[in-house]
Image 1 (cartoon, rainbow, N blue to C red):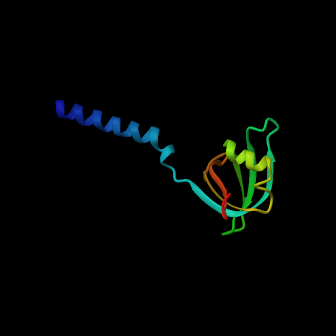
Image 2 (image 1 turned 180 degrees about the vertical axis):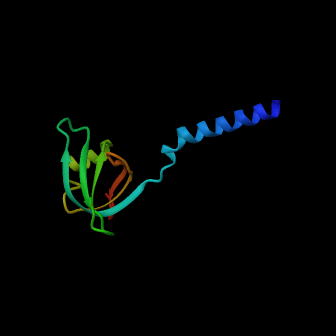
Image 3 (image 1 turned 45 degrees about the vertical axis):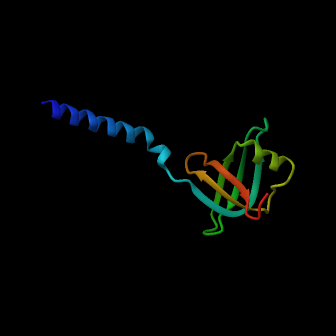
Length: 105
């Protein structure tokens, strides 16, 4: 009886672990392509950038919140036409992890 109870508890703990960690296990998506549009939020704390994927030509909207990239938008170090490599979590808003020029910056 004890071993059955222990097996059930272990299975429940494993299921709970996978249920809560599944979203964090998602692999980020990488897109390389030129910026077609940048929209800064009025408060300056976020932006949406639209990239044209070099592989398929699809337009991908990426939500950016990191301060370094936002500063690059504001002082025009990143602007429309620049080729960008971006990694993001695919979802409702495509939250950016990295957003960098392919040549540096």
